Image (tube, rainbow, N blue to C red; front, side):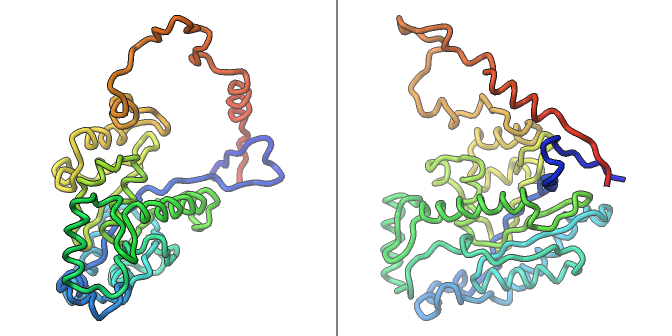
Length: 319
């Protein structure tokens, strides 16, 4: 029987052990009529823009590739998948076609999630006006520019941040009904900018770094895979050449490689945008006359010792 680990204080109210997803996969929808002809947005609401025939084929092919990845070409029988999907027609149609590659037993569930919808560009879009607006956005900056009657990328960042909080609660409280003996894979079918914002939030990239990111192609997958130490990394599944094409800098790629084997919660001291990039220079030691060596935090406080000790007392029970 499988052992279950729980704290001494938790006998009466047992909480399922949190098992992290093996992969979190971001997929942009297939080719849409709007991608083919921007005039579509002048007569069709953005959320109703459908896939093209090519987009349907792209989605079906993406499903086949995903099945091969999750099953390790058929050698791994212990895996399941949970989908989050944007409410836009092109995203839901992409999900429907991807789903043709999966049997019912492989899919734990699906949730439509409004917070991962496309950036709002306003209502019906007048083509000539939008051309001028997008030129203005290039001068102003993609992240902070807000479309008239629409959103900025910063607005999308806020709702994606809220979605991530809900995602972690779903995982922590086992709302996804995931069996710990099986690999869990979360697949998020969304849009180009939303996917870039998701990665920016997750990996703590800066606004400047976001500005250099490129949109994924239609039905392109970006796979965040859980490393051996408990951190997610793009470098486990993807090559350095791919990440360069996405717009990641050498420092960002180096951080992804570090994450592939880093322990969860570990600090990457070589990552400049975590500290050094925000200062001109920092001295190695405090030069102020009134500095006090007793102000050091090298030694753990008593409360921290008690917390670690209480968390280390575990009981192995069997079910």
